Length: 308
Image (cartoon, rainbow, N blue to C red; front, top):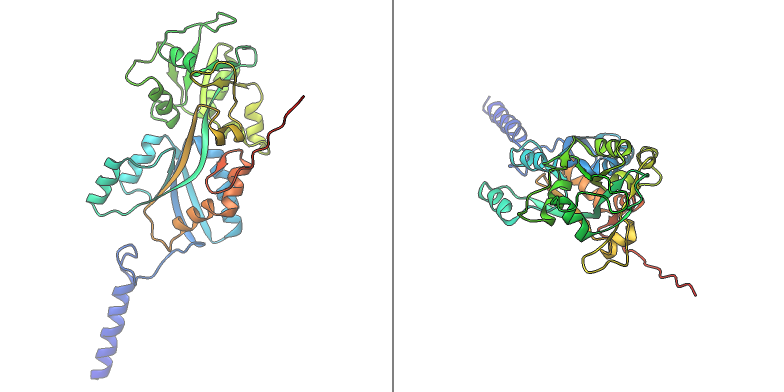
């Protein structure tokens, strides 16, 4: 009788042990692994084409893994992470020192990893012949000091995806504390920016380059129909104009480059970490390269062609 009681207590103790949260108990039963389970990630909307492909590939390789992506504006991505509604986010920057300090104060450990380098692209209606612009001109357009296209003299409308997006933040930082011009406005998404530009000859659209970069993606190719991409010259250079091609993003000759980061607070053994490892590993980096972004870990080979 005494032995039976001891056994029951032991079993009860094991049940209690394995019911604990695995994030706080290292001996708890892990309900997901690097290749199995269910999770939700939040991704800055600029990267929807890339993550649609990456998640499809990951789940094809690991059929027991199910990743639900939520694509939203950068501010919403950050708020969701701090509200503890997701363990993993992807956006265009790492957390600031202040943001990391807030997390550390509540004993939240995060791991940040550079995933890729990409860019902000500027797009036009094909009827607009002013396809080469300088960074100085773009700044003056944003501030409302240049209000007409150089060639056509039509009024300039500058359209963003959303005031809380990474695209908007990037361009706003170009002019610092100065106010935006009256003809700068936002719609709701990168898709809507593209559609607006297709219908309005005087528009200048601001989007993430991933929406028009993958030459093998049918949807991306459909987006490219009916728009042209602006070539940009950096400040102090009005002779060489660069479009957001992979090589020029890598060398930063294209002026409006930025980065893609993963920020993860999940268990090192869980599905979230497994997906981050996949994205930063060889296969994920190949998908990024195919998408015409610049992989964080791959070496880009530059070839110079001289003509005489």
